[in-house]
Length: 460
Image 1 (spheres, helix red, strand yellow):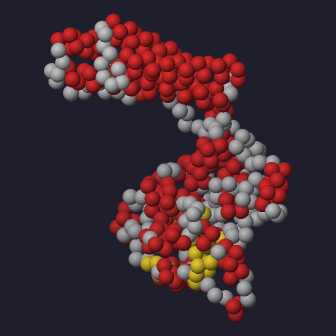
Image 2 (cartoon, rainbow, N blue to C red):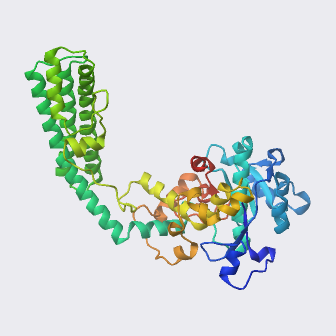
Image 3 (spheres, rainbow, N blue to C red):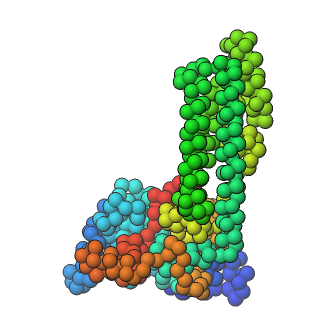
């Protein structure tokens, strides 16, 4: 449930840390103590929301007091115990922001103006709406109690954490070794795969085994030709662009994927042939040929029906005698823009304030027994996939150097060009959330949002 603190509600804590914890309080990553309220009986009323665009929300918030016309948290969220501890939250402005339609943002909390907003499609799902409201209410409580707060994917602190992880010496060393290992694997895998194809074609031609549709030998040659072309493109890229070029690495991966895929295609046809022999559906000569094929693949696992069990891993390790290197557990300093975006999303979710808010969602239907048996700290990993050691705080981000690595912020010149493209001056503060807009970013990209749709898959 929602976690409250001692600052706003005037709680008197015991004298020692252990006594505080024994009394039922929990300690956050920031070292401050929380007390959990039950959200199980809290209810939402989707009919009470004021529905406005972002611009109209700004006008409503800044209208003269006599003209105020918006819904309040107490109208849409029935949670008496929350308002008992934080009476002012009951009158907190809440909106449906129609500008969120079509985005992945479920809701946000505006830290400067003190209101929260949700996407319009949240009104169609009471459970999702309750989850989003509680997440954003937790961000409001973090502000009131001076707990470590939430963040957004493009914030300066997320960039700092990303830069420090991507540029860590161990990360660079691990990825350099991986690049070398995968290059060696690829250049060993491809020739061995091609040799295997050639041997199988010769065996099939010697035995005049051109069965099936398409004819087996012709199919083999077509697959072999595809693998050769892919290998040649990778080899040419290495020669022309160098072994560290992204295009070479892309073509190298394509070559191994093609080689492995073609090998699987061919071997599955063998597998069907062997399965037919196992059922006695073949004459003596064909049966002898299938036994010869089985000898070729003797190191691969065989299923009960006589067919072979194939996947890319046993193709590499058992048939070709190669083991594909494992991906490092570090952020790749040479990542593609798509992967950089995914890595920053992961870092955003590891911010201790975001972990706490997602954990509130995760625990919102816990009854007293479940809350007693499972501390908030104990469910953080289940809520976000991040344990306490992986979380980070504002203080930790603030202590990092202000460097710019690959995938970091664009230049100020890029932001100036973006301003002209948009027909005005680039905004440095998001008018919705009040957050700073980094160079090269748009205001809607830096809101204190959550993506409840992404969180659904990890719910119990």
